[in-house]
Structure formats: C-alpha cells, structure tokens
Length: 410
Length: 108
Ligand code: HEM
Ligand code: FES
Image 1: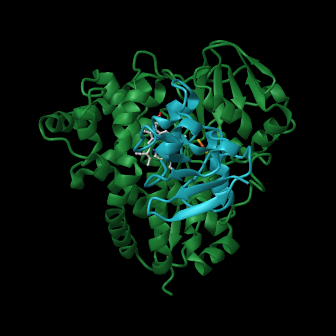
Image 2 (image 1 turned 45 degrees about the horizontal axis):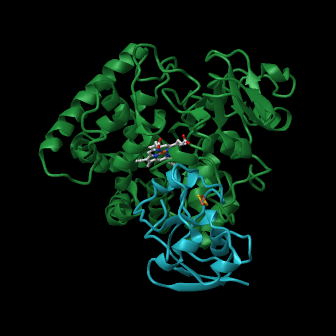
C-alpha cells in the first residue's frame, strides 16, 4: 500500500475518477464503485489523464452497451487509454462488423467444444506434471511456478510454438499489456513497446509464412495463414491480432489461477466445502472468474446519440463498462461481495463480456481452471498462502504478479 | 401445458412441460436439463443456449431474421446449421406443443 486514498464518500461525486490505475494496484476500488452504482450509475468523469469518459457501473446498463454494438462501437479502441498515435495496431477485438465477424470466425474453431475435448487429456497430463513437481515445505511463487507455467504451455500449444522457447510468448504477453508508466514495466515507452512487438511479429510471422506453405493444421497460426479473411493481413494487423491472441488466452487465465487460490485462502469455510465435495469445482470455476474479474473494463465509443441509464450520450463519447463493478452489483447478483463456490447460476457474470465480442476463449479458460482444481485437490489439499498477491498497476488487466505460498509436508 | 422434448448430444431425452410465454431456454434451465448453459440469462447476448430445432418444427418456430441480434450471435456458435436457434428467443406457444430440440456437443 502506498498513500492512503481519499475517502470515496467525502469527495464530490463529479470528482470520482475510477480510471486511476493505482486503485487496482492497491485493491481500493470497491467503495468508489459502490457509490457510483448508487448515486450515478452512468457517470461522467470530465477530467482524467485519459480524457473525459462515461463510467457504466451497473450490470444491466453494461449489458445494454454490450448488445447495442451499432450504437457503441469497438472500432480502433477498447480501453479508456487511446491507442498510441502513429503506433496503432488493428485486431478484431477492436473492430466492428463485418470485418470483426469474419476474423473471429477464423480462430473460433480452435477453442470450440470439439477441439477442447481433443485438448483435455493433454492439458490434464501437463497440469499433473507441473503440480507433481512443486516443492514441499518450502516457500515458492505460485504465479511463476503454476499460473505462468500452465498458461504458457497452453499458449505454446495453441500457436504450436517451439516448446523450449515458450517463455518468449509470456514475455510478449507482458509487453502487450504493459503500462509503460509503471516502474516494473518491461518496456518504458510506446516506441520501445512497438519495437518489441515488431520482434514478436517477425518471429511469429516467420512461422505463419512457413505454415501457409504446408497443409492446414489446427493451430492458430496455421488457421490464420490459410483463411481468406486473415491470410493477407497488413503488418500492423498481423501484429494486432497476434497480440490479441497471445494476451487473450494468457494473462486473464493466469490471473484466475492465482486469484482463485487467493480467494479460497481468504474464505477458509469455502475451501473446506470444496475439499469435502470436489464436484463443486464445476461451480467454483465460474465463481472464481466472476470474483476475480480478470479484465477490469472494456471501452466503447458512441457512434450515435443515445440514452443510457437516464443520461444523454453524445456521438464520440467514450463509454467505459466497468466489469469489476457490474460483477459486484447486488441488483444482479445476490450477496456479490461474498465468494460463494456453490452459487445456483454462477455463470451469470460479466467477466467474459457479452454480445458479439464475448470472449471466444471462455470455455477454454474454464477448462484449464477446472483441470487445475481437479488435479490440485487430491494432490495438495492444503496450500498456505503466505502473503497477498502483488498486483499490477493497470486499470485494464486485473493482474497478480506474484504470490508466495507453501505446501505443508502433510 | 405444452411439452418440449430436449435431446442431449448423447441422445438422452427429456420431456418437459413449458408454460406458455416462457422461453424454450427457461424450460430447460428451470428443469435442470443439461446441455443449455444460458450464460446471459436470456438476453440474446451469449449464444450458449444454442439448439437445433427438429426440421419438422422449423415452420412453426421460424428462423432468425437476417441481420438480427440472434442471427449475428448464432453466426458465432460452433457447428451452426440451417435449423440452429437460440432457445431463449423461442417463446412457448400452444402450437409449439410437442416441439423437439437437440443440443450441440457443447455450448460456446
Ligand atoms: C478467465 C479468462 C478470460 C477472461 C476473463 C477473458 C475476458 C475477455 C473479455 C472481457 C473480452 C471482451 C469482451 C467484450 O468486449 O465484450 C474477451 C475477448 C476475447 N478473448 Fe478472452 N478472456 C479470457 C480467456 C481467453 C482465452 C483462454 C482466450 C483464447 C484463446 C481468449 C481470447 C479472446 C479473444 C480472441 C477475444 C476477442 C473476441 C472478439 O472480439 O470477438 N480469452 N475476453
Ligand atoms: S441465453 Fe444467452 S443467448 Fe440465449
């Protein structure tokens, strides 16, 4: 914790600025959104370092924005931070129909139910090996040894990337999401970031070109290389889509693997419930994803005048959907601040978004988490979390950088 | 009360009474019929309530209007077919008594 934040209820309503990344690094965002949901569910922040923006904080209003993609566009920008001028990259998460639809459909089969069934055995075997190799009675970093290790293996499989170089993918993922102002960022300017992403695009682009010459396979690069909608992408678009596919499947799942253990350690009675009935993993997994909310917000831009939550939205306004807040909205989710592993409708949460941009990898993410907990419980029923996770300085990715744990001898 | 037969991917059948006005999705979820996830709760925003309408019933259920939210969400569902529908968008009516729907391998 750094400086004490101002009291969320003592500052004027119009001065609330939930885009401050410090709120998420310090984990102090809760009361600000509690107040916004009550007093200004669609709230105009006139001044921030990201410019003026609307905050949408209630579940139902967020759903309205999600499903009205013709009013609220994803074109070119999906976070409150605008893309760096002159260094923009295009990707289908930041496109509107019809191009979005065409490109999404290219990669979707890789993470659709049929292929997940094929992948399950492999993921389970690897997860078991990683868990069997964990030290006993010794402090280690859960993020590095488990969360990063497992998600990196998954990425290498999805891209069919050279196995021994797979941590390269993790590094690029960290670069893509890096906030260049944060002291612990791997890159310190947008130019430096672009230079690193150029190296990524060249390395993956080489594989892309090789695979274009070979018969189609079921990895993301081959799929992109063989489909008319993505075969001839301009360089910046290849860079953008590769970045999207690396980050989408990586950081979010990684943080759910860390956050799930953290949440259980903070709710020992739920942890015990899980040990007593391991079939609860089925409802545990979506509850982890809701509770952790790995993506803090997504942003849209209004393309028409619109009414939202009684407010008048103008053309060009930034509209920010705060998933962290919608997932804690008591009008949509009962007892939302509690972590409850056997909720009746646990998938009713906003963490994957909704509408045409709804996370294409959501079932893969759930599968990885389910396997992790199914393999973890019989091996290591007790894991002691020794300190809270160190969090990322970001208002976009809800990141956990490290978390010390120990597995007792018995 | 009108009845709907839900057939799981593995062939298991469930005959369920669905009150008029309720969606075919709700009929499944309220009766714990597996295979329809309905993550968005019926907002036509997730496509995890995807079903194949028995072709004999397609005239009565109708197909999604091209360009509609249902059509665009359905276009992202895995293994979409000519008889694909989002079951949250089919409201139960008297004339749908006997409707048969099949579930896909998995919802996505
Ligand atoms: C717990 C893990 C994950 C979370 C919380 C998450 C969250 C999200 C969110 C919030 C969106 C945007 C939704 C919107 O704009 O309405 C999204 C889109 C996306 N995600 Fe995920 N994601 C996760 C895992 C994955 C995985 C494993 C992949 C895998 C390959 C993936 C790939 C993508 C892609 C490609 C998009 C863009 C979809 C589009 O624009 O049509 N995500 N995700
Ligand atoms: S329940 Fe989500 S689209 Fe039908």
